[in-house]
Amino acid sequence: MLFYGTVQRLIDLLAGRDEGLDLDRAALQLASIEFPGLTAEPFIQLLDSHAVELAARLHENCSGPEFVAAANRYLFKELGFRGNAADYYDPRNSCLNEVLARRAGIPITLSIVYLEIARRLAKPVHGIGLPGHFLVEYRDTDYSAYIDPFHGGRVLRPEECLALARQVTGADFSADPSVLQPVGKRYMLLRMLNNLRGAYLSGAQDRKVLQVLNLQIEAHPRPAAEYKQRAIIHLRLKRFSAAREDLERYLELAPEAPDRAEAEKQLQSLRQWITGMN
Image (tube, rainbow, N blue to C red; front, top):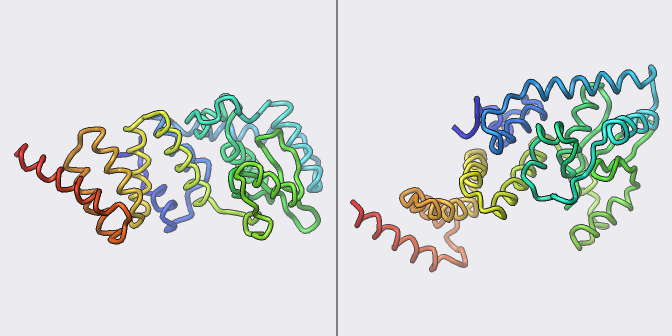
């Protein structure tokens, strides 16, 4: 089992088979890679309470600009949610429970806090998968605004979002309006998984990298690169039979891989080693 409790609904969501699992619960299941045995309910209740507190600051039929202003005051001024630039690649920044407890995180997890509070209040706020920097967008028939939770809820125009993406990634997205389109839960969770994998790889936390790769492969069994990377992790953990199986699968899925000769040589060595051990 990858996490405490059942993960089948999470896998179904990641695989695009079932959208029924709420984003907050799915994100907390991902966080149990870092925090085994994590209980979701206290953090669900904390989001509930934040929504109730924000609702008390809104008048009936408040406009879009009024909601955004009130949400930004409450979340970023009163509660003090902020971007954790100093320890950006700390895996805890990708864990919703820690972001709620410490009130610090990276763009996508802070955006999830904003999204989930807005969802509880039936407000039209959506995730925006801007390359290199996640945002949210408020949009109704009268008003729209892009909001940057990592930088205190600053409100951005479309051209400012594109400039931010260029600043972070070095690429020009001005000819690609799709980067400012809303994304769904599945996209956000896959992006969070990639963030966790990067954080664990940089910290040489192989067993946690393995958990992330197991989940990614179970949800999407076709991408060859994940099998290759998992084979490397298995080798580091001295799981030679598992490494052999993943290398075989990698070569099956990527018959024209540029490193095929190297992978075949490594696979042959593994087979000889395993035979010699038996």
